[in-house]
Amino acid sequence: MSERLTIGQLYPASVHPQVLQRTQAVKNSAAAEASFESVLQKNMLKFSNHAAKRLEQRGIELGSSQLDQISSAVDKAAAKGSKESLILLKDMALIVSVPNRTVVTAVDGSSMKDNVFTQIDSAVIIS
Image (tube, rainbow, N blue to C red; front, side, top):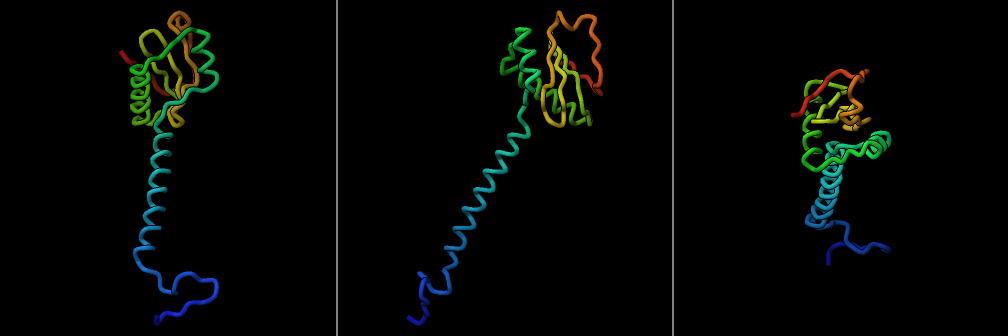
């Protein structure tokens, strides 16, 4: 053995390159998982407490296809630079904060009549 060992050191001063590559690969995979999760969270549609209460009070149930349509509408509004958007879906209306991808409030068809929606900069109509 030509390499010198010091007290308290398990390995010689020169470490094999494969060991370094393996630890870097583990760090990179952890970063990739974290970035995937952050991307998923950014693209996920959220509901504020107020919107959740309104949906429950008004008996509005959203299926997965409707959630996909709403998410697609938010994407379209974001592409146009919208901040607060009114999304009309069949017999309901949703006010959405586009940058946060958060539904702020929900209104059913009977409550929409003779109603004025304020502080919105766009509307997306889903048929």
